[in-house]
Length: 243
Image 1 (cartoon, one colour):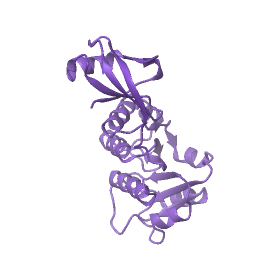
Image 2 (cartoon, rainbow, N blue to C red):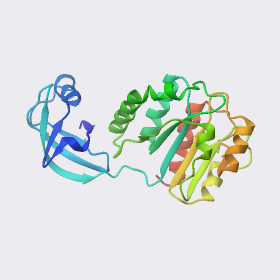
Image 3 (tube, rainbow, N blue to C red):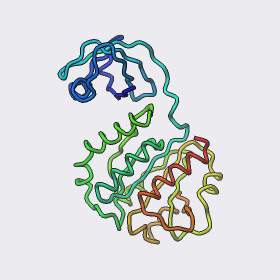
Image 4 (tube, one colour):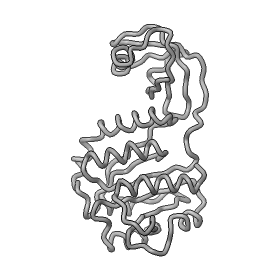
């Protein structure tokens, strides 16, 4: 069944008013007809079975048949801090880590990031929001992950951390502490993972990060590309937490 995340303004009593962009998708791309059923999500954890009434590319509406709580969201809230890189690779991480269950993303500019401009990152936010929404719909998520404003590395470390959060920085030169060991030392449901750029973090950056509460961890003996590290770390954290 087709799934659509909609803003609160689309919910009018027991009726759904689809915006024009989604109406066009329903009528012209999916070619759904009146009486067809779709799933609508409010982005807050609730989903609704909706029967289409009037279908047109300009305005489609439907009737809510029932409502239920979405049960696919992990209890562990992962905040992924991703160093900026080329567009295709960054968008791949947004898409795949959304599918895996990440709750929020923060673009980060480190000393070796391929993208060094906050403005350049911000110019892509509309496209990135769409990628997150489509990935959340496809993977039956109950929410669309949050895309936070981009931060420079120093800004990230200067910002106060949430209480009881487990902060991890996978680093290829770390050979002692495993991800499992770091997670076992903090049983909270909030986890931050700081993923480095193609050239990795400098030793000074890792030192600064560990001084502000991050634990350097190894993801194994093999060196991973940053997009592989982002997906592997997300999956491993959720697996270790039973999510």
